[in-house]
Image 1 (cartoon, helix red, strand yellow):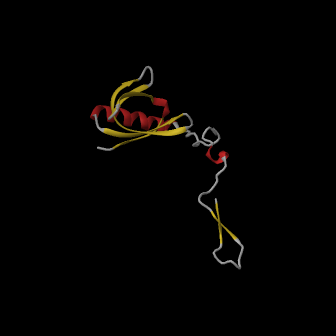
Image 2 (cartoon, rainbow, N blue to C red):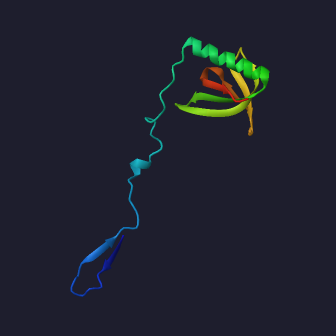
Length: 114
């Protein structure tokens, strides 16, 4: 904040010029766990459709867009399915950054891009 005096000698008013806006700390608190996406509740048919799409994407080795639910938030993956481990319920996928594993039960949607 900067105060300026008027150049007019008859007027002794001070003019305040604001150089920024103060925002209190609570507005920037990123550790607030109360803000999250609502957890998706998938039906048996939706889970079966995800499983079917996973197996087709694995067979075709095409690029897919996967949405998963992790740590109370949605995560998005653009990848190629490399392996499906049905006994451990884990899918291994590859993206430009390497190979990763994802629990099948965390997948909320999958779309083939090719």
